[in-house]
Length: 402
View 1: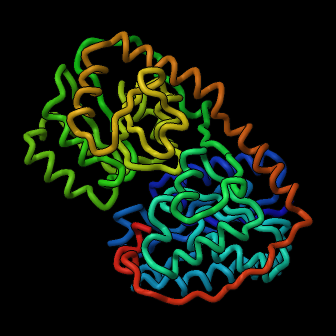
View 2 (view 1 turned 90 degrees about the horizontal axis):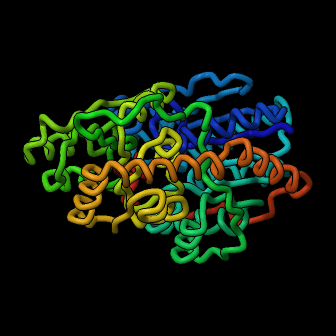
């Protein structure tokens, strides 16, 4: 099949969306599909500093087109960029017709892709991820209406887990039977455990991902002064709260115990995990956490939260440790327990690794998504109202957070 995959974030952006996209693209190519990816990116250095920026790199076997989010960078003009995405999809279809369009993220990419699919008489698949469930649509009437129409009219809606589907249902009213559960996955040939025995010395804690208070990075730092035992910590990544996190670490007297390692290239990330013992993700909500799966596959014990998108793959004191989001004292206690109890740490890591290898395979996920494409092949996008009011929105001043 000829597939057009439309991404909101791709490398060099640091985002779970980038990881999802690269693994899906590889599986589609391996499955014999002809794939074109159209991806937004930031060219403005100030905005790129939050997520990473620049045109998307080549992907073997995939035609890759980058669209700079010029409207979004200028003044949060999502509508201008939506028009650009629609035009790019239509142009590529004229060059070589597609069989199906697949958008990653409901808005703005899903909205743009669904309009293009309607115009071209093609089926449209939308993967609901991250902010789609947590905040997109609660920000303004423009984005609420767009999300509701995507959720009501896309040919198929893919979502990572039951907890995330439940959140979208409660917030935007989408019927649960509209969703197809396609769990997060990890490349277990790329992410593998270290070939080493437990050593003496500090237990090495790792936070890796977007450095954002919504991901719990500031809670992690607040907890560390009350964590007992011998430990050191690394905070890896870029994001909107890097500078705030560095200031907080200094204020808390953690400068000698916490290292900020900055942006990590995707191919270097497995070694980053393998250089640590415990993965810390005190997040408030996820779509489905790619970084948790990567850490599990690399043999780390996981400390996270009872949060949407986490509880689908981590169970407290079975294959990880979970506390309530924002409960800093409980987080400190959980970290202390896995630091001072080496047997517990090893038990949790073994259970997580075994489950990751058994359940979260990209080969199985790729086959599932290909099957969805084939099931939609003769079902063009249904009609829907494409007009939206343009209303004030808090994300127009900080569009990178959408």
